Image 1 (cartoon, rainbow, N blue to C red):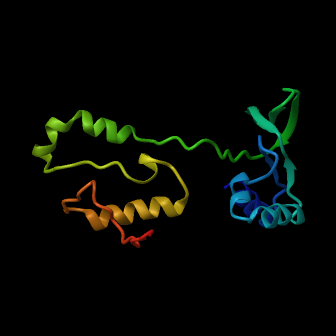
Image 2: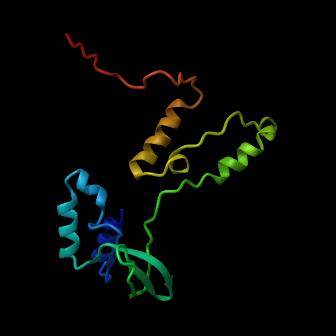
Image 3: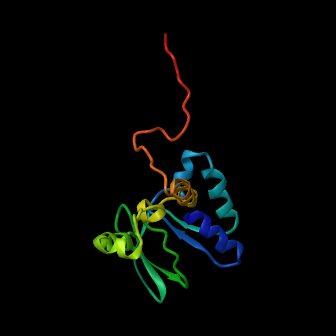
Length: 157
């Protein structure tokens, strides 16, 4: 995600830097063979890449970063910070509603389901799938032990 956001900023003509605690930008893309293309594209756009660095703090006009190995601190100028951070679910609404389960019947509510990023933050496609699946299953009795897709039966002799 960070690589994509950096690319969008650079293509918009903004001076762009990306700070990552990893050796490469968009580390997950090394699993699907996209990394070389992404890293090369960022470098061609003039994005400054700062690997093995952690964001320590930020204040107007600058950020403090530190080496992941030595802890050596650096100050970088920064007009705008776009954090791409851990994927923590924001499920407080679900918890609040569950705590008021006794009030549901009066409001005509029969169930509350946690879906999408509130359940498990992920890529946009996963959130779209979660919402689509919820809409397909709305009002249906779903056997939690059933396989929701066709599988090829494999026979080994």
